[in-house]
Length: 215
Ligand code: E4P
Image 1 (tube, rainbow, N blue to C red):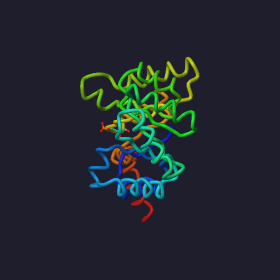
Image 2 (cartoon, rainbow, N blue to C red):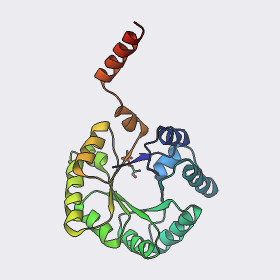
Image 3 (cartoon, rainbow, N blue to C red):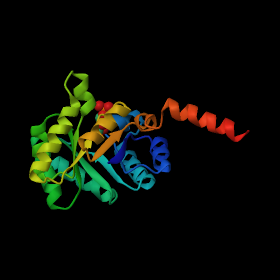
Image 4 (cartoon, helix red, strand yellow):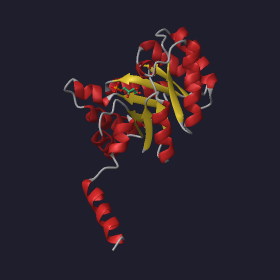
């Protein structure tokens, strides 16, 4: 399972990269705004800065919602760096744009996916990644994990190569459950990745070993 970090914060990306477990980064307009990145030039420069920290794919989201706009924006983003993945919303023109980029050999991430039908369409269009938002489904009392399960079944039935990128992850159990269900990637806040480290028996066991080593 690949670990992506879901942030535009360069320090957090560096921390995960330095630990040696990072396979890529996802961003979105809200995450960019949270870091105070404003203006087209600064936004583009920030994507390059992220690419220079991580060795994996970096998802950069288009703002346009019409086909021509998404193509123009996506082509500019893809030219920034070879590891940029154009992130495109799950709407009709978005599916058209994903098909367009697939035919040009440009990687895509179909975002804002909340149903198995949407995931099927994304795979048909050739998306590199599909992003089901499991935390946001849980937030509205719908089982986000069962969506991962459904998409895995459908993709395996037909051999779709689109990678399931479990998104909107809130806590470490989401990561573990997505791994059990066969998600290809989990994109997580740094806190959820770090929480995987913790177990009280590790803490107490280490304290005991260190104390005994002094004897
Ligand atoms: C995915 O690529 C999105 O950036 C992200 O996972 C959304 O998460 P949120 O629901 O915590 O905003």
